Length: 554
Image (tube, rainbow, N blue to C red; front, side, top):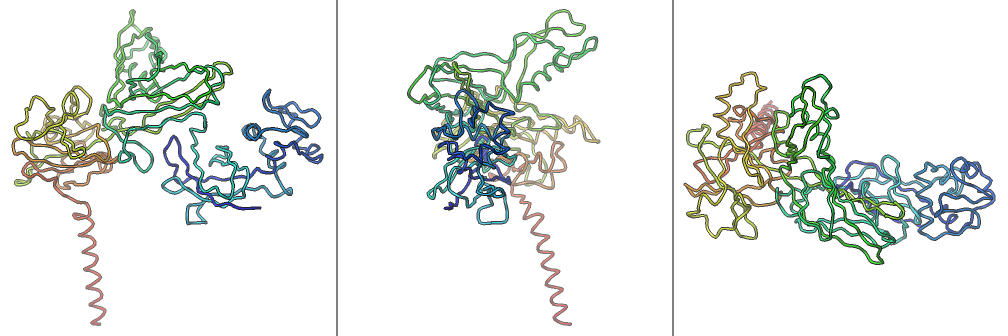
């Protein structure tokens, strides 16, 4: 049989799947039997074929899976229906039947393992989610690591690449984020954006699915805010106006705070959705397109009433704050490192069939600074900055109303822009800055001392990957440029190992701080390699040289 070498690109909601094992199984023989009705008498009389009676209607060698799908001896099917039959049988655990009908002999299932590109003995996808295999041409099933059928592909000699997504398997619906530059996308497929940054999505539903009216359900995670939809829509809340407190941790006869119940409600809905946006799509013989404008928000609040609170007779109003940034001792950066998605469900109003799509993960990042007086080598306080960025050569400063373009940084009006000072967490697109929390977990906790140290700390949240940012100090007119990555909160590039131990919230690999001098326009370079690794390497090299000289003289 002819062969083809194909490269597989595997993703999950657009995010590359790394280190996973995928397989391909050739079903060309059984595909032809289903399509042409060419089952032999031996096939019909086999125990596998007869065994289908336990699950389906089987009469005179003809199997009925549904009103739409029938196969057997003398029954011809289109290519599309034949593939649908294979998918239905596979998903119904009739894999042994397919393999038996597909074999040239009783012991030769046509299964091929994908391996790391260029490494034949390593059967895993690489860091980009890619793997390759040489397979037989013909109708081929791409199987997931859990042995689920992801996709059927008609492989030919010309087939070079196959893309699969373990979440988004419905080919009739696609959603694309159209306006975010690739510089904001990480290697593992996360898109790192600013809070408030415009996100443009384009939804396409194929005409093949629109044989009657269809309802499109749009369900964003709580911190993705829908700003505009290009077609008329209705909104349905997933959280009722009145909530029964007993369903969220309030036990009869026991006291529980309103905050405790509110936190339980937020926890219940934070990873799902709080609103559904519904768009009605009429029957059509053309593809349907929809444009959505959204943004990532640091906080979304809802007003609700709690009923059935123990020992409280009347309903109580509460504000549910779905905050992405509220820090705690265990989560100093809130949940900003967690990806947020929008789920799309298109439901055929006549048949009830549905197709689904989940967008790739959206999140933000940030950076931490500790201000130092480089001349006296002590922590510095009272430093004030403005946050800026450079886009296409133009400078912008951040303000309460967003980014404002400036022609010069000299003599700027302080009241027009947001001033960033120590002891605060500055969050883009949030009205008020947050206080840096005290670390009460350390054994030598001293609130007054921690507050004083925190005045030397500047924390910024809601930044995008790949953007050239800067801190501008107006008194000395100094600019300190920096960029952020997806890990910049956890891994500071320019640390001061002298001061790390003095920062109450410092935790290696979790919450790290870049050192900046109030006396210089540069971020202080306390490189880990320079300060730690290089001296060790030089010491080891010195030992080797001394040892070599000693042996040479001996």
